[in-house]
Amino acid sequence: MINIGELYSLSVFFFVFLCLYSSLEIINLRRRRVVRILLAGGNGPDARLPSHLPYDRQLKAAPIVIIFGTSLLLLPSGPFLTAGIATILLAGNFLMFNGMRFGQEGSDHVRLYAAAFFFISSVWNVAEPVQAQKAYLILVAALGVSFYFGSALVKIVEPTWWRGEALMRALSTSLYGHPLLLSLFSAFPRLTRQLSVALLIWEITFPLAIFFAGNYILLWMAIGLLFHLSVALFMRLPLFLLSIGIMYPGIYWTSLSL
Image (cartoon, rainbow, N blue to C red; front, side):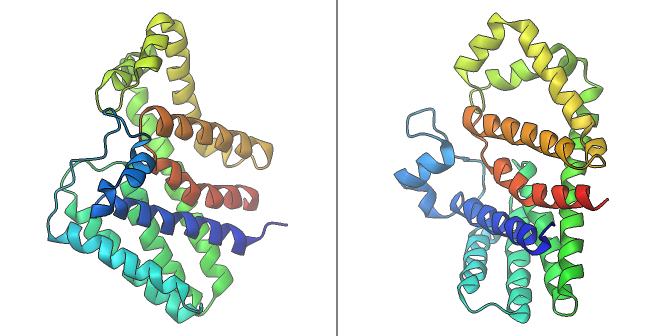
């Protein structure tokens, strides 16, 4: 039997962890060697931390608000305290998102939406805990499916994705590229096209997979985990890997509940 509480807690854990992780990109801890290794995947000249974040007042305040909110999780839990924490985290994430004038990625949107869903469910949790958790899981599942399907709709009309050229361009950039993969794909262009087409098919069929519970949805999520792990390791974009920790528990529960 599916334990709704455990899946809900797992998703919220990854949401809180993503909030703290993102905060490290803004505050001065990001300059320390150990954090540089964690965030950028290395310590050499090619290990770049995001440098596009403007340090305006909202971005200076956001990590403080988020860290204060998460520190309250150390107190004895209760529905009213959780609702208060959710309110603080929503405010912190709104400040962070609004302060990023450019350079936003998918994980920034996931974090903001998850903050709103966590706030809604936490307020509802005061009266109806189980229904609130169900609503949260459905919302994050819808978020995950829409992200994949929306991404596929953008790619599917571009011939460069069908030919594998778009994938090659991404790997050839100085910020997100990887020389080893670029050399491999250049030597095997047919493999590049096949991987690019497979990615399109996987994304466009994700909404359908959620209706086929059991091994089907687990297979689609396993492919997603492998894909995002590869992106985190080779393209130095680790934050969406944490984002699937928010969405996949909801996707799994929703699939088995349909």
